[in-house]
Each structure stands twice: as C-alpha cells, then as structure tokens.
Image 1 (cartoon, one colour):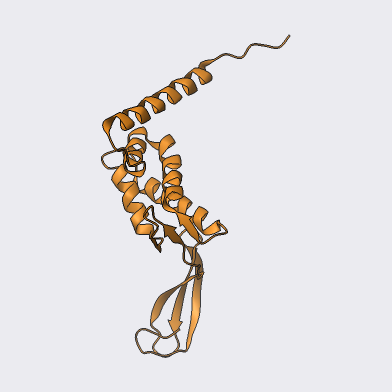
Image 2 (image 1 turned 45 degrees about the vertical axis):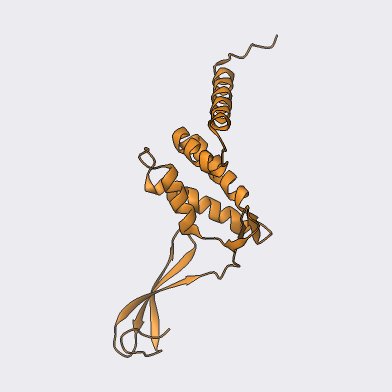
Length: 166
C-alpha cells in the first residue's frame, strides 16, 4: 500500500477489523516514512451478477438500484433505513450464493416482496404494483382481494384452538 501523504510503500498495520457486516476487512496503517496514519479496506473480488430484464436485455446488478426501489416502496411508512439496508443485504447475499451469475429480474422482485410482506403490508402492495406490472385496476383489485383472503385464512388458522387427542 502506498501512503496517501508521501507515496511511500513502507508501512505497518496498526489495527485490523472486519467491516460492513463481514464483507470487508478494515486496516489502519502507519507509514514508516512520514508516520501518517491511513485506512484501507479489503474486499473479496466477487463475480459480477447479471440481471436479466423482462425485455431480454442484461445489466450488472446494482445494489443502489435495489435500495432505491425498496426505499420508494417504504416511503412514509414506519420502516427504518436499517431495515431497508438489511433487506438489501439479504438479497445481495442470496444472489451472490446462487450458482449462476445471471438472475431474472422477476426473481429479485419476488425476493423483495417476500421480505416486505411481513415487514409492512402497504410497502408490500406498493412494490407489488410495480413489480407485477398490473395493466388495469381490476388486476390490482384481484391482487389486493387475494392478499386479504390469505391474511384472513392465516388469522383464522392462528386463532383455531387445537383439540386434545384422546
């Protein structure tokens, strides 16, 4: 590592810690030439993930785009920035663990919906309305009705008392 102050390559590591949820190693270094301290980060070089769009085009996975989409769905909802980051981290981790390097955008959308549903129903519906690309109000109403029915069945299942076995 070259010192940003004097450009010397002679330095020593003073402190090492994991950073960014274990995705990076942060090292504090001290230059032997000018005694300046500076920080470096080490990351694993990951293979690029390609997102296959509905149009058939492919583009590099962009975490910032994912965060933006989740934030937009959660706008003016009681969902913290930390939860948005957690959702994005989980999805990015899941994508990097998959065997293939090409992921359909629909799969990413489904992963977002899966994580938004238990977190905030309004954010879930907002995201679904864009992800599902509803063509008219009836399609959207069918989706909302289906969601209400699933919620009602789940509540009924939770409130059912188990009968003792004799």
